[in-house]
Image 1 (cartoon, rainbow, N blue to C red):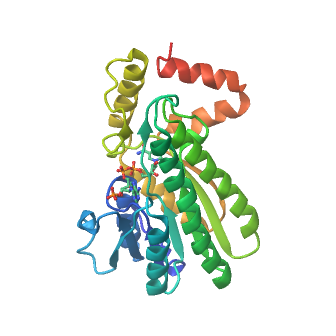
Image 2 (image 1 turned 135 degrees about the horizontal axis):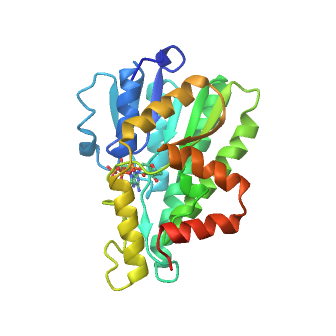
Length: 277
Ligand SMILES: NC(=O)c1ccc[n+]([C@@H]2O[C@H](COP(=O)([O-])OP(=O)(O)OC[C@H]3O[C@@H](n4cnc5c(N)ncnc54)[C@H](OP(=O)(O)O)[C@@H]3O)[C@@H](O)[C@H]2O)c1
């Protein structure tokens, strides 16, 4: 990737979920730009692909343990002298019908990916507003516009993050701080391998077809480096906004069609795509 000279405006960054997939690509791209990176995982040993880099700092952070996650963020933020960039990327899928997924698993997903992430965002945003500089990124998903079947908790968490992003964009006007709602389409990561819930729903033909479609789509998706390139360009622009990233169809054509077509059209197209019957 060609250099954006990002380190001139961004000396330090925190990336949650930097041990794999998109977060690992974001962390690598930022380090390549000369930005000092604090990267998180639930187990610091998982950050070994990055620990050899002199400007990388490993942080243990589990979104499932909210108070400890907030404390870990505060320690890292102090060590960095206040982050110029915070990328809330950590997340996971939970697959299963709403009627059948247990309350605990469903609520845990919304708590981790929306409520705890929002607490970390508040801490980051506060510091940035005080310094009158910085960029806060929420990695939501194109699932905000095209909800994924049998992933209701995920869709709710991501829609909530997108709404939080829009709220903060309004509050950030004129402050020197920018807020980006980064919406990836499908990217070839270990997301489906880490999926919680019913991974092999053999007994239910509709669930099986949807799962097979999710697997096939991810296998054929672009590599995470493309998302890293799009994210860094968005940060370099220094402006708040929604940024869609992914294949040309997913990130450009489908949202453009959906913005002019009735929502019944979008639902029918999705049902067809996922063979919902
Ligand atoms: N891949 C896609 O197609 C796609 C599309 C749209 C949006 N996204 C979003 O992009 C983000 C990254 O996904 P990915 O595809 O890169 O998935 P991935 O390869 O499974 O990586 C997920 C990362 O999140 C961390 N993580 C997961 N659960 C966590 C928790 N409870 N607390 C703290 N960290 C946690 C993991 O760290 P450890 O397991 O090492 O702790 C890992 O670093 C997610 O928010 C996902 O929803 C992905």
